[in-house]
Length: 558
View 1: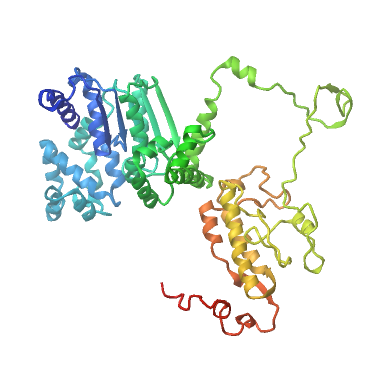
View 2: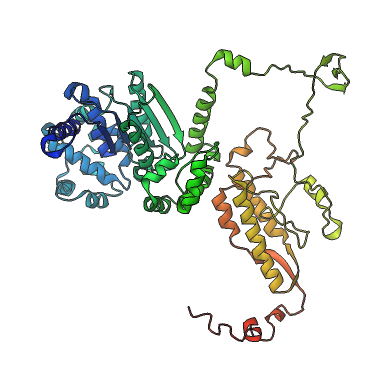
């Protein structure tokens, strides 16, 4: 009915040209999200049979609800359980045989509570039934959706009964908490097998609510292209992306205020991404002319790198999605067999050692000589944290020797036994957590904060204590056990002797920056220049009182 109503509405608008001024043959595109996506999707499925005189240049469909039965199961007992009540009562009003079935199933004492959604708005109903088990209102409990009348209604309303001829842009959150993405995957596969033209985006970051906003930019870009006369590529494409807002056009269409709202809503920046390309002269000019846009652009790129950390947790849904997407991408790299053969390097594997190299090539242990025009010596690199120069600590300790055994530090910047010593990118630093600069900045700000105290309070030496360093490394290895780097494989992230992961921070870049924002001075042994640790309090006057006759004598009042 929603699809028919949508098509009838379009018919009515097109017949209004005499008084509305609308073109007799305008370009028409459809766009709907969630419940609106149902109406949009049904309209394009029914168009051939119900309104063959109509033609659409495209339809954007977001947050699609592919199976009513699966939705009821997914949202039951959750924050959106009220949507199930509202949906069931909507079907109650529309299908008399389903109303009779529900009346037989209602528990009399709570029936009127269930029906109250017919007399109130959706927001009230959602709040009223949040977290409730909807099956508790029925005599058959959770078996109610399995009854014949319910299955008859669901079968009539489930999408996938016709293949649309209208080009489609479909976007869906992998974390959709209302409608499982598998239902949309199955519907897209059905359409594609039937010859539909579809661009399908699967979003890793958003959920059902936030995608209605974050997905709008890219949907508008796609619709704008259709309305301007650009035809989409025939066939189907499916991409799993960090965010559906992948280019500056989408961001610009959403606008500054909306983007700021999204940042607050999601807790992570969203915005344009154009990775692996050089900015054009026009784009750079735009950056200079619009600093606010340039800031959003930079935050979006950085946010892209920061938003994929969950893929590194063993067995996580994000990891499974990333693996599937990577495999699909790698399988698509070479489509031309001739090109594949031409580009694949020819090599030989020699399972025995080399005795020497001479002017002709390589001489192997068995005396075989392989001749080459050029030989590249790639025997590996020293990826340990062993310093390239001497660093001396207390009691004759040398950092080269200590780190060659097992490189351990505190927060990747301090080492017990080495006073007045800080370093960048030491053991367990954020070197694989996104862009390197935010990590280095976090380290620098920590060191600057520490040195301010060091100078101001006249401290002679500082040194990280053994226990905080040990506790930190115990925490690191406990967290690493749940991450991909501790799998049974060789990696330069692991120490070749201990097997411990020694390189990257076991959390996101955002996590690292938050940890490094506060210096825990109690973890350090501090040795002051004076016997009295309060000597730096001075003579009881501030600098401005002694040296600045016109200084602010009430700085605490603002």
